[in-house]
Length: 80
Image (cartoon, rainbow, N blue to C red; front, side, top):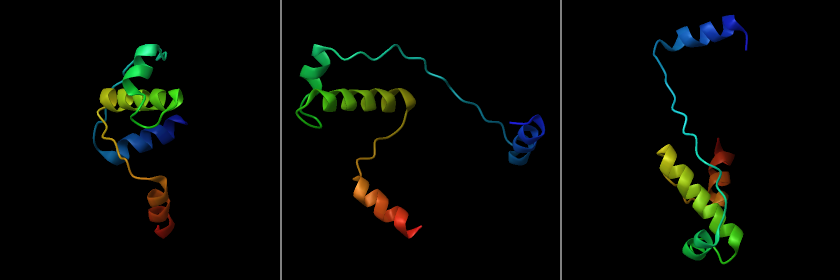
């Protein structure tokens, strides 16, 4: 990004933004994770891994989980 564009973007908002970077260790699946999370989304190991990863990211990032099906998200997007 060019410096002039960056200054124009910063001065157009007239407020100060900050961000927080959380550095997490590598998330390696193990047997404990599979035993604890195997029935929450499905019965396969990859579903337990995806559920645990999503839970970790939402917890560390402070985000809420939205369990809305993709079909409803796409139907809403079609009207926009």
